[in-house]
Amino acid sequence: MNKNVVYKKRISFAWDFRKEEEWINRCSEEGYQMDKIGLTRRRFRRDAEHRYVYRYDLQDFKVTDRSKFKQYLALYADAGWDYVDSFLWWHCFRKPYEEGVGEELYTDWASRRDFFSRIIRISLMVGWLNLGIFALNLILLLSIGSDLSAWANAFRGTVMALNGGLGLMLLVIARKLKTAVW
Image (cartoon, rainbow, N blue to C red; front, side, top):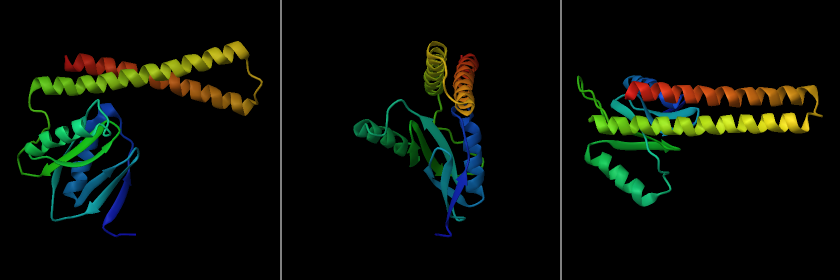
């Protein structure tokens, strides 16, 4: 295994993207530069000679839309941002760190509002999806009953509770973000 490559595990949520950025920027300050994003794991390369400011962006298009993605990367490259990696709709960029300079991807109110609108929209989508899965499971449970073992019923109940709880939590968070942004 390469001694200059380190994997760090971390679970982050869309509404806590600033905490994720702060953590990655602290890692950069300590000499670890992120180059790969995953669901629960980030890959860093040891490079104490450089320090970067990392920022996340959320877009509605997938990386598979190559022409739109190339235009998107060119826009940030023109502003001095280097592309790092993407995971689902999240894209990470970095810029060399400068003391006393607060670097942001979005510098105007309209762009920031649009960014938070995308977070709200995805939170609502996933929240309603989870509530739909919860409702479907509940309907199946009530209509056909359960001839499963106690462990299977406990598992089904746990999954249903998680779907319902996650769905409600995401809807509440989306509402709070909406009132905070507007």
